[in-house]
Image (tube, rainbow, N blue to C red; front, side, top):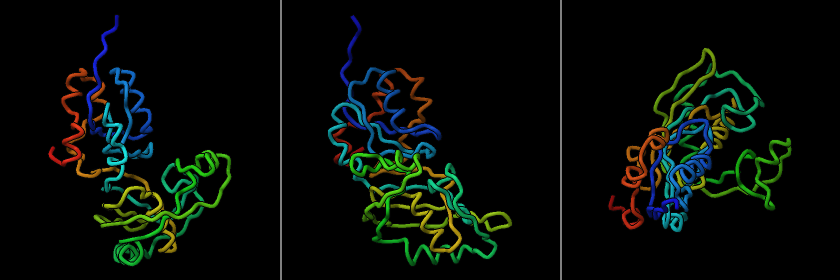
Length: 245
């Protein structure tokens, strides 16, 4: 008879690699290590990297609390090119020169329109459902529909480096935002505000709630560990809820 081990209860911080959907990480951990209850505390786009909180056992019962935490990201925006997906994987929908774009102009636009309370329209290439249908399924068929704007809060949005033309200007940034914020949409809307278009070309989550990327284990490393070592890296539910970890 196959041995059955009880699930650990809590949150496992994982450093997600690029090119892998969040649900694949959930499925792989369930199958490889025999966890009965596995979920995640806030998805990352397949191309994004960084902190993904995996919920195990009773940790799946506090998913709302985990997902509700504020998020911090680092990334890169490329100006002068807008895409269908608002990131580097989409088809180009417009191009414009960025010769005169400066860091000061980018920072002024951010301060004016992209810090504090704002409303975002979810991108078509997203898992948001309208009438039970995920938007991305409509998008791949070339369809577009009306989407209700959603309230989000941007606590801080800082340019950490700026590289001007000769090709297309790029800005590295760090942003701290409320749950439900689409950083792709921030990049897209910032480009629109500047009149040149823009898209997100790199994104890495560095914090979710009180958990930081330093607590995370690279996914590839987890797959080489014995189950006991993985369980030792799980933050218990009580510790997560109290912040005592």
